[in-house]
Image (cartoon, rainbow, N blue to C red; front, side):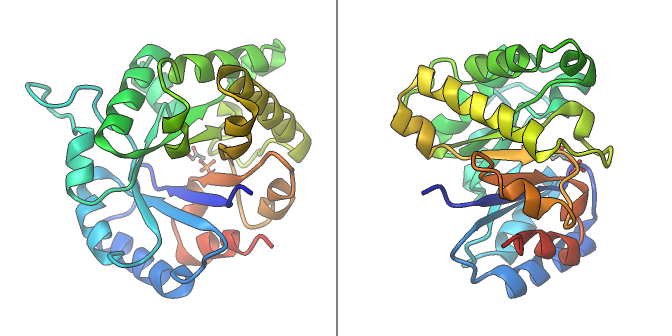
Length: 250
Ligand code: 13P
């Protein structure tokens, strides 16, 4: 069985005090949940403090990006091994904001996936179509290609440390989530692609999160869909009350 996995992507939000206040409440109120996996993904500068604040708690800590190179003259970049060094568990890669605003290609994302896994991190690999791509009925083609390219050269064993996040771009930060049927169809398609790339048993073991306007009011219906194994949450992960109520989806 795939353990549900809910991760909060704080994006470029919160400050030291609010970040530490949030994780203190999470630690106290959800620290003992064994039935679900929970992660928070703060901005780089707060990662160290958040790792310390969650020390000994099962809540995982992730970064929102990392460099595809291992070390050297890459001004402004953060390596995967630095993230391991400070105690991070995972990294989000290929988020649509990285792809669209910062021009990350699937080839670059794939290179980052390799570097992150080699360093020992877990990876949340994001895929998702734009509104225009959906309207042109190209959703499967787009997300399938992002998945195949993002996982190029990644072996089946490493897939134990990979989670896929389906995040339709048109649903991110818009308040307009994909319906359970829309999301379920894409999740099922992505699992089929994983089966073709690896094997049915590996495809069945990989968790596929949904992301895009997940909130306490819609999490239950989304999490009830068979191939939705968790959520990658932006805005609703920024306060303890809303994030914790998301975790109460059953
Ligand atoms: P929102 O939950 O704010 O729509 O953001 C989703 C997202 O991009 C998570 O990575």
